[in-house]
Length: 179
Picture 1 (cartoon, rainbow, N blue to C red):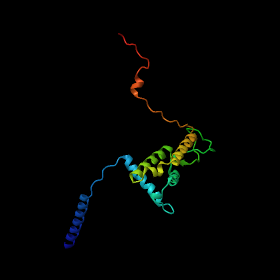
Picture 2: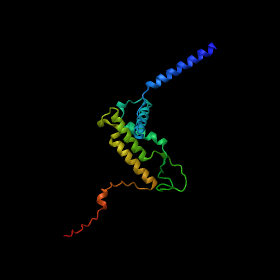
Picture 3: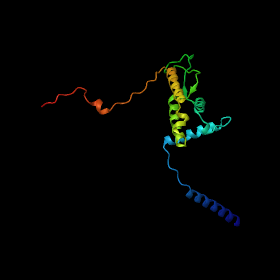
Picture 4: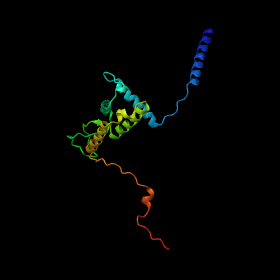
């Protein structure tokens, strides 16, 4: 019976420690989906830099590292991008499967760069040295967008900005006022 009492007191003390620790931990504020994704992307990019040989610090990071990261991500893509020699190149809905590679979709890369650009500045980086904001990154994204659009046979068209809805509802011809 003495053995049971010792066991119970041991369990009780460990439970009280757990309860005490739970009271000390403050619940973290719930992050928005965007903020959570931005944090995850930032951590992933940081891990990518650490895994380089030799490791690259954030201070040494340049747009070349960002471009390599984007190309590295292609291996995890889910968008079929037909190659020039493929029989389905330029067809929006190919009738059969092919061996063309899966890549990251342009929209995903564009959103990723936007989040990383913001995260870089939120983590102390200056806008002037932001490697995610360089012209080479914009050129790469433009090239990816155009090549994916051609491969699917769907030309990319920039969305036009919506005009003021109140003005479009009005009749363009003036109505004469009766006096």
